[in-house]
Length: 307
Image 1 (cartoon, rainbow, N blue to C red):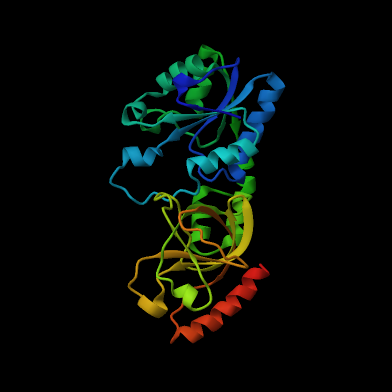
Image 2: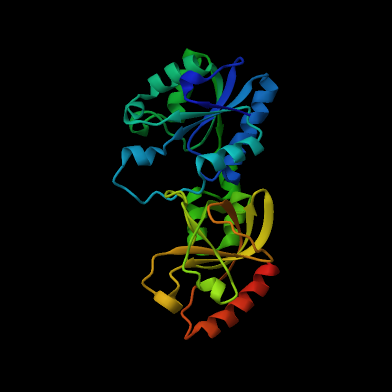
């Protein structure tokens, strides 16, 4: 899979079949569109192309809105796009100037003239251009004029999988990891750098890797204890994770992400790790003392090992 930074940098290898959007999560509903795109591209002897955007349009259009909670970073999306079998991905810079292009300018100048698009595959609710005024009807009107075909993924095809990025966010907010996995088609994950903590876990026999530098737009699931798997330097380990405020010791402390990796003893400060969530175990609780907390952590470990 080839990756290009911007439409103007695209090095075409002939005519293209194209889809476009943010595709946050690259979930099973998105794969309906991508699978159809790949199928048509192969049948027509064209390249399957994804046009996506960075930064996320909401960050540009609503800079004071800090509530953006994405399921995937751009690096994660590229990983999923490659698994989905796309030929090319174009990450176009999203700006206020770009958002002002009307539907005709966007399709004619960028997609047809810039990317040699001969076939567009989109979901039934896709909108584009200034104020998102462009849609399937405008595409059908423009297609004979600019010589491209349009394939719409129908409401039935999308609703058959009954999934949306909003539903996945809600599932993660509720700790419903099984539902999130079913909608995504893979284990939800995030990554960060191991930073120094207060060393309380080590004193209780459960040393933890405290995760910092997590992407500030990445959705972190609800507070609680989870069974997880950790990828560190290419190796995968079973672990358990606590997201929360350590109420047994200091309920007013800021939120932390602490991971105890099983059968592991190494200095990993400053290392990048990726956490895959496999099961939600329980809510975060306040215990009367450290001994009660240790007893509960022993139970958590047993559950996590068998998750």
